[in-house]
Image 1 (tube, protein in one colour):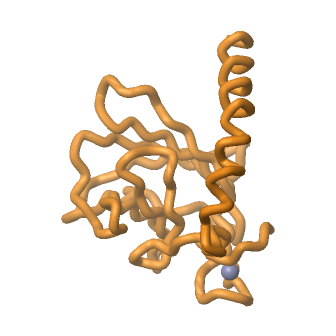
Image 2: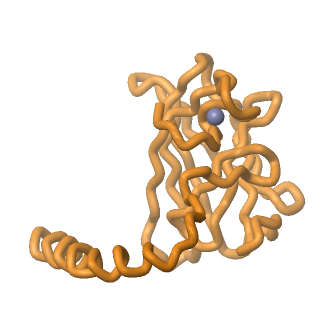
Length: 156
Ligand SMILES: [Zn+2]
């Protein structure tokens, strides 16, 4: 495993000069602004298709898969589970398809900043992709999104 990480790092480093060369042809376009999901949620890009993560008014997790133009697409063979909240008493989430979205059967546990771990498989044979982040439900003072879906360039 160590060898594999080392070779990935080496590959990444050896691409660096190429990336710098390409930047010169980039006419000042900024990639700093993060894209918002169609429902104002957080876009998860570690799987293809990407998906949007939104907390609904009744604190359920709504997952919407997106095409390359960030338009909703119905889930295909994807499966998703999630674990969230207090580590000593976590909530296990299961999801049910509702139209083009997957909706959690359980609401998010109490609190303004519950941590969450999503586990996604794009097909039954695919490797599980894990996403961990804090569902910060406070409003961002700069954009009109919640902090967990904030599109500002700054870090929190
Ligand atoms: Zn913001």
